[in-house]
Amino acid sequence: MAKPTQTDRYCVIGAGSSGLAVAKTFVERGIPFDCFERESDIGGLWNEATPTGLVYETAHLVSSRTQTEFDDFPMPEDDPIYPNHRQVLAYFKDYANHFGIRDAITFDTTVEQVEEFDGGWRVKLAGERTPRHYAGVVVANGHHDVPRMPQYKGSFKGEILHSRDYRKPSQLAGKRVLVVGAGNSACDIAIDAVHHAKEAHLSIRHGYYFVRKFMCGWPTDKVLSFFEAMRLPRLLRQYMYMFAHRIITGPARRYGLPTPEHRILDTHPTLNSELPGHVAHGNITIRPDIEAFDGKTVRFSDETASPFDLIIYATGYAMSFPFMDDGLLIDSDGRPTFYLNVFHPKKDTLFAAGLIQANGSIWRLADYQARLIANFIVARALDNERASWFGALKSGGRNAESIDTFMASERHLLERDYYAYGRHLRKLNRRFGAMAEARYPTSPRQAQNAASSGESAVDVASRQHAT
Image 1 (cartoon, helix red, strand yellow):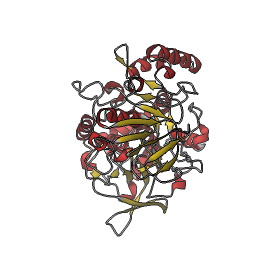
Image 2 (cartoon, one colour; image 1 turned 60 degrees about the horizontal axis):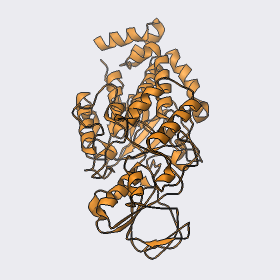
Image 3 (cartoon, helix red, strand yellow; image 1 turned 180 degrees about the vertical axis):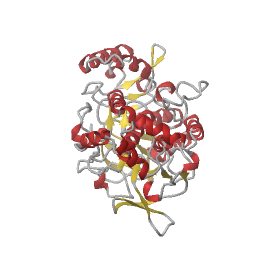
Image 4 (cartoon, one colour; image 1 turned 180 degrees about the horizontal axis):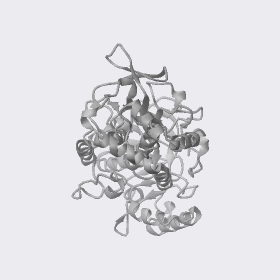
């Protein structure tokens, strides 16, 4: 069997949940690759022992165990319904060991530069003088690295943190704390502040839907999956979910929260069972948007003002790809130009995995993305007609899609509806037919023989596997 040269290989950047899914799929399909991870271990943002890790002491999954796990590798049944971050990391390590991909990852290696070169890609690694050449690149480095920090008039004389720098409740002890934002992390930190800080305040620009993690004793995402599987019209689902939210949680104003100006399916909801109750009990004071700073005093848009010791911005992250030209991935409006946020419309060997936000398990979606990437790579290598079909499909880039339903906002630049997006990925994978079982050819001659002999992709896969 001919051993692939470096220029036959693919470069996978990152070993978080998305990079692991790509590595596993490439191993299964026989696609030669190198995976580079800048940290000393896997797990990405879920690994608290690395600088990349963003998890805090009290962090748990916001989606339930059975609705989050990879389809082909269940989480331990004795894990809780909503596992904590240490259990998540243990799961990733078990996943890597089970599929034999840990040895394919090169740790403590930073990718410094990626650029096109001679029909492929030139990849410069830190510590190596000579760049490596690869047939293709999969960007799976995540999008939670560069904090988005809002700017206000004046200067604040107290302490300012971003949520990525929050690690444990002791950082809040005895302080007057203002958390800015209303996403999952913001609410978690605000609740920690209830139990550890002197005062807990939450600055919210507009109304949000705070969705409880359980409905009638069932995980909320499991209930939603049941109804989503029925493929009901979006308008009907909108009314159903609005009605259910009103019955189970009730109007936001009854708790002292701002009333949302949008419908429940128009934005990414916040899953938190505790926050509305804490607001209603006066444990968390809701404040509007910040207007300006004056020493330790924060002035708000409703003309009120209060002193604070600590402000924590839970305001999300800016996409960052320091190793390559941002124009290859992002348009002038800040959104990915890629088809499905995965496939470059013109470059058949440049991919992204996990470059999404969703109201469901990113792990599963990254796995479906990895399968679609592998199908396209194998189809091209075997000169199969499915490669031409999909190449034409992806050439339209982002404009070739019609499955987005979220409000246009900075928060939703990467947003995808988990259910619709997942169905679409699975459908496209099925349309590759027999190619979904084919393995990557181990030599150019085998690919040429398969194309000229008319062998089916399954026959090629079976013969190569036997070899």
